[in-house]
Each structure stands twice: as C-alpha cells, then as structure tokens.
Length: 101
Image 1 (tube, one colour):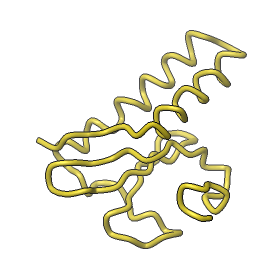
Image 2: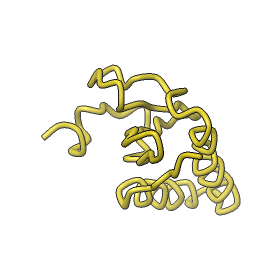
Image 3: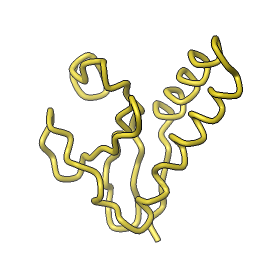
Image 4: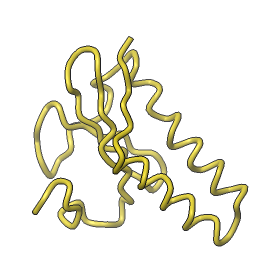
C-alpha cells in the first residue's frame, strides 16, 4: 500500500480553507476539510488515478478535483505520494509559488 504524505504546504492549505469556511459555519468547515483530507485515500491503491496537471505536463505530478479544489500530488515512487497543495480551482496555478517562481 502506498504511503500518503501531506506536506506542510498542503496542511496549511487545509487549515486556511477551514478558517475561511468557518466564517459562515464551523460545522461545514470541518466537514469540507474532512472530505478533502480523505478524498486522497483512493491513491493508496490507485496512485495514477488523478489527471496530469495540464499546466505542467509531468506524469508524476497529478491532481484530484474535489468540488472547488485541486488536490495536487507528486508520485515519488511506487511506495510514496506527497500531497503538495490544495489549490482553489478559480485561482490560477501560475500564481502558486510552489510551481512557478
């Protein structure tokens, strides 16, 4: 089974999403983050299920689309996946310093 590693950036993204949604509803914020966090569980058995990130076109850099968010991950090897960021789909990926500097 593949190990899924949430990077500090991805953890911070989830925290920011939770804080933003909490302005309207703490309960909904917790549910939304829970769903985002567990949506990557499928990667343990199907690591290449996500599409290749179109802006970068690298077979090891993929994403899962969940609601308004792009969960971008890196296939390190057959045993490990790093979740790099949880990016709002309305924002340009080019503005994310993780990928473009």
